[in-house]
Amino acid sequence: MLDFRQHYNACERSLAAFALRGFFFGVNAMNKPLSLGDTGDVLNPREVQRVLGIGRNATYELLASGRLPSIRVTPRRIVVTKKALEVFLGIVTNSQVEKT
Image (tube, rainbow, N blue to C red):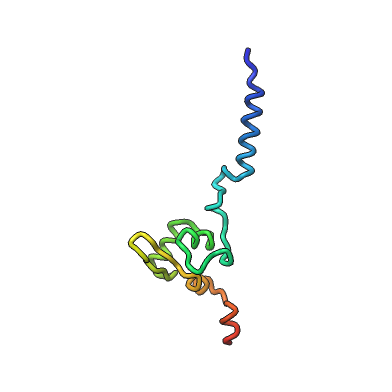
């Protein structure tokens, strides 16, 4: 009779290592939350999605409805300025505080 315990334990250790690195449960670099401070002046819809913590469809609905101003650079490329996202979120920047 064959003993599969050694093989089973090796597989279990491998799965645990993958889980710790975030390969399972949908956790990867693309799904991690993103802060506005970590972004550039121009964001793509994926970065907007990560900053807002919403899904892909909700992001594109915001862009299509105009509630979140965006610029269509090419027929397939949409960008959002950091300033537009700050206004959407209601964030007061230092320059706005100095003016008031």
